[in-house]
Length: 513
Image (tube, rainbow, N blue to C red; front, side):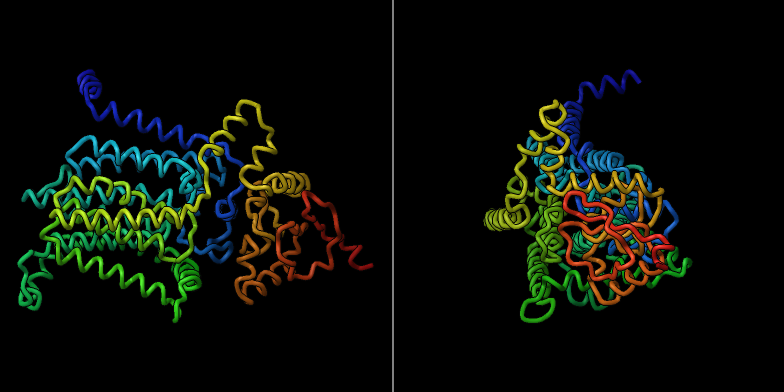
């Protein structure tokens, strides 16, 4: 033990990584006391509570993502402090994986340190919503761990070794696929990282002098089966188990429609260009052209550069996939973008190095402008935190920094807690699902926010029927919500809070009169 501590003390890695992890922790620390304010988190929190109280995912409570994110929230009882703490710990793991991946890719410590610090800044601050416990924040750890394993496996192959540390190559590929399958069950866009690493494996394993005849006689196919079969099996395993679970519960169709089918319309909405999904087709063509170019030039590009360029191409496609400039989408390209800062140090022919670096630089600047768009000024976020913890700012002013509706949401939740029992169904008409979590209540019906209720005639009809059947004690109409499309004739005005109105169901005797 003493010898281990002595070695760690003398290690340059230790003296870099410990302060870096502390730096990341301090960047994320203010997120632990943020108020309940972010709309997506409000949905996840409400679903987590519903799962804890016995509702079935998709059939009893609904959102359009795979199940693991909701299970994370349910595991921590939708307590935002605990969920943000879990996100912080996962983020520390992601920084560690990034660091060791950078050490594999680059031979210069300076480049490893610079890229890791940049990743810390981009992932640790609100600049790309690193402070929010979104799906992307939890996905990066398994994705980066898979990236490290895949690249280590390729390095092992290049050295003609059979084992990569404690694992065989096949086991390594399987574990990498398994990690990406888990990430996919957090959010389906992890498929693009799976595809990126699969393409990289194909490039590495196909001989540079492969002929058409070697493809026709399946010789290349047999070579590719060595890495791809365990990799794909690992990816498929958690997904197949999840499908089997929902099939046995009799809700497989709801699972497929919610987690996958509903995303088709979501992606298509903003991708219209001449034809439906026209922009998506154009982006696919650009991605395909980039991948084909890298395949043709792979003999002139080193493995580290090839790995990063393929990953960056897919990461960029991932970020622009739905054509919505939601800030947290940018998180998916941050790892490859941060690592690409070391591209000039990697082995590439000079003229390709210049063009590739210029291309990556231009795409990075355009992406940052598109996704971040000046939304977050970092100094006010941290100064707001320091002013609050040093008693130079009131709770209301602190909450108003995040959203002007936060004090209103807390007032409504406080009122509902006084006059409802835990798990009691109510109906909130608006897009602040976090009120359910704050008041420890659940929605009457399976939809948590107004834009889900209004998404189709069927969802509106289903919600109307749920209200008429369940007859919730309270209906809350938020000040910033669209007009209520559901008849609330059997409800009396009770109180106005922050411009929002609470209605209480009339007593049975009053209904008869």
